[in-house]
Image (cartoon, rainbow, N blue to C red; front, side, top):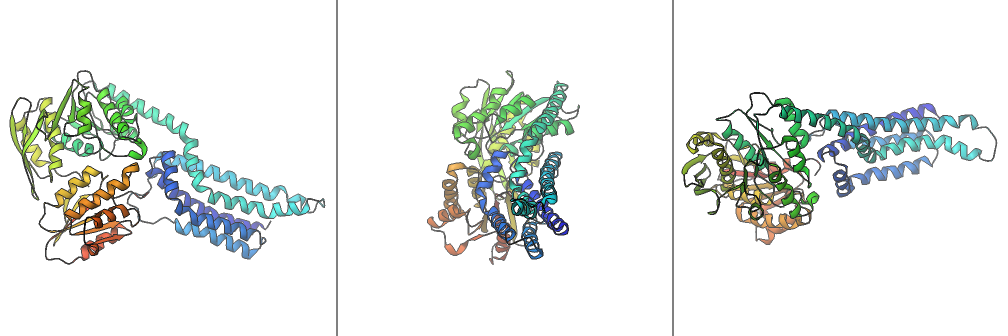
Length: 540
């Protein structure tokens, strides 16, 4: 075996392996380090692996032409194609974060890669002394000596999509032990804070907004800590407790998210909430929940976990929640309907904000105004006001805090770009109810109304149907519609056109940047309002 040729080939292939692996680790991270979800993602995105498979087949075809300088140059060029395709520097919305977990998986991955490289070297060396041995298997031995090292090195590159999740599985016992230690430490910290009042918030949608609104209102009277951004997983809650909780905090508002049955129960086992709020139950994450019944069961794991003396605030306008609420004696219903304990009335909505009156169970009333857009925001604000009132804060003391509340980032956040262009940024985690509410807000403006959306995902078998309905509703509210992702948004396009929307005013493009460029290019005498409805992560 020509050592120089082999070293060149092995080094070039290693570069390709590194780039290919980093892209796969990025997708694994976006899939929550969950191997089953990542496997489903790989099956859905099988096309991205077709080119490497074709290159792998060409590699074997080249190898059998004979080991020589042109063949090695060809193999090296093929493998470097993988490096070029996956090279770092592509702009991701959420790039790979080199957490401690990722670093541990990288170590495991490169140990596996090192084993393949060691086998390749041994395969070349082991037979070197037999090349002239003269027995009947001489030709086989020569073939083995010349070809196998290249086949082994080439194989590890094309096995990278398997070795990456395998690294995750190998590390699973270690990761579980590390997570358990952090969880135990967070539980210890919470146990050492006996005066801390913990409020758990969950829901298919609206939980992050509720968390922000409730924290703002409570913080006007109490020292309040909330889980930041979308920290709603066990390790997100644990990190918040370990890094941010201080002895001066009186209230901890804990957002709880889930994709599977049992995950809210796990979070409650960490945070041990005194009270709970369930904002909604709907068709969200149906790919992993499998049924709406499982969604209901999971959200009400919070209701089953609150303190016996605690209070449970439920969105009474949600039919699934109302049906389940009868099982809980400590349930307090809030909503816009007449039969809720806390209700909102006389709602006035405009493009400047919203006004509404809160009516309590004892008949007390108070008028509020907010900069937030849309009737659906009244529902979450009402829930936050109801909780604060039940906690002992007078309605009148909440008037100014409510007025000061700003939009949660990426949730109907109004962004004025100057000139005649304004964005409504509703890019986070869209769902059928959220899409409907966003279209209603867009309809408030006397302007050229433009929708930019990639549609909704993680809706299981209902995804096509719900996106089709979204398209029909969008056709009633928009002047122009820009769809991001031609194949993915096909159901939305059918809904739009079936509703009679002019085909020359709807366009499907490949990327968000293309859509934004198109929106900015539209010529109109009116001010342009661009609704950014959902922004899918990079793994989509």
